[in-house]
Length: 359
Image 1: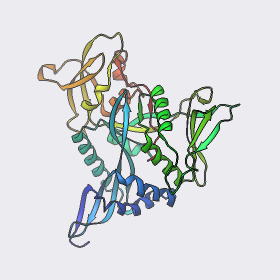
Image 2 (image 1 turned 120 degrees about the vertical axis):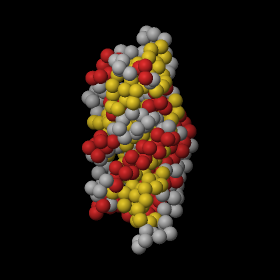
Image 3 (image 1 turned 60 degrees about the vertical axis):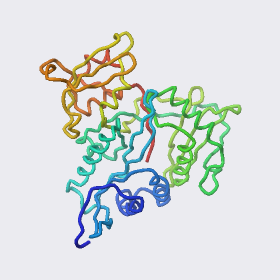
């Protein structure tokens, strides 16, 4: 690598497979088959921001740190957003504790803000890594169990696959899942046939199942198991009397960060009975995304809301003062920060997040 150097940049399609070595070093628990699935399928449409060791011609020779940005279509209160799911966050073992990941995450957030992406999300192996970057939990994993006394007619999409491709028409299943999610939640990843084809391929890599549960010819639920060594229930969707949800609070599972408050707040509105319009002076403290940091006027109406930069005349007025993580936690309906309690009866935040994707 004489004469070369290090660059923070997005990998080209031809360079993406170079990440496999670092992936296997960082995630030794993943099976070879799951890795094969991931690098065959997920790299088709994702972006990989990396710290790249280059030769003198600018060709990537070595990946020292990386973060994979996997795109999902997310329904948020009836609005269809694209949001990136961060996976494969890793630094080469001998290169750790040099600030490489900080460089990547700051560049990533800068680029996302320029794109006006409302938020991004991840499943943390260690939440302490992400809290300094403004990430906070927004979703607890609910626990579902099959109701006793019901023996469903089971048809496994994975078992029917040929050469890695589902034989079954998945339109009806996608429609059922989309309807189930839409009834229960305000934030979830869109289910369509492409989503389910990819999910079946993912499950097959871990000798899993994707079971359609029928009652009298009608879909009553969906269940999945996976794990080559330790078998576990990957998902179970359904309603009473077929499926029961535990009343206990689930384990925190997904963290997120609002990237562009201006793009995010249109899904937030006034609560019913709070009037037709209110203006809340808002101070956002976001030292990592400078464009967010500062004074705003938050206009809330019956159906939507919007932000505008506050003028000099607003200085000194009482205001709602929140960090980026507090704003994220509150607007996703996860937790009400102390500073927002006086406004919680006024602002209709999101209620019901369901993000159970793995990669």
